[in-house]
Length: 178
Image 1 (cartoon, rainbow, N blue to C red):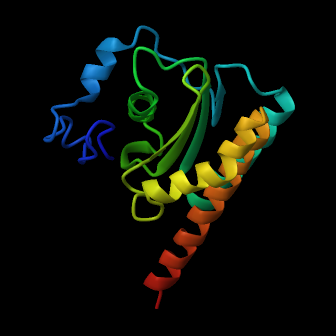
Image 2 (image 1 turned 120 degrees about the vertical axis):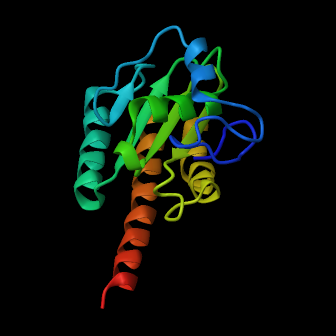
């Protein structure tokens, strides 16, 4: 995965960034309370109705069955004392989204910071790039967030990202078959 500060690669094997000396351990020391994961939708900011949460969760359960990977949605009131990009990087790794191979993607909506972020696990960086996930957020999520439609925004992002990943994985599997 890319360092949230300088963009160089940081992995389990390379836990300290060679470009800026960033490490997950540095972030760990700043966090006072570690949020407990509760499935694929973690609505710590309490933005979603139970029906909306279930709709997104059901989509992500099916996505996991279809791809073997994980997509996790997190809403939080604030990421302070971290920047949203640092927080999502830390949380993605802390929760081990996508297992040891990091075959996963996380969406983070930080309310106080007015930011939506995505983190792509390094096993999927060849399937969906940071710029592609950023385009999805800008085109399909941000406009709905600006209207205050949090559930619709998150569902739209999940749906579009899942579609891109499924298509890429399907193409990749076809390419490798005889």
